[in-house]
Length: 124
Image (cartoon, rainbow, N blue to C red):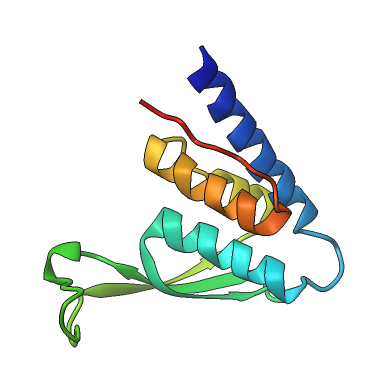
């Protein structure tokens, strides 16, 4: 019971943070890094850049993680370059929110870093 309420709380708070980070004027740099982190997590992207004016997201999506080795320099990791359009940034980012346990832990960490709240994640 407590787990489901914690999951709902994390999801609602990350959606609230996304809503606050998408004003109609210029996006602050710290919120741009939030948007990039959410997109990197959702798409398993290595590189993400957002053109807010033209409403485009360019990213290199990692196609296969098996070639990645953290102990050596990775010269060849297969990626796919994608250029996505969005109409509404807030809706686009909210659609990228995953509801699995690993993603919830990631979002709890984002909430801690952006809101300085103590969000503890206790998932079985």
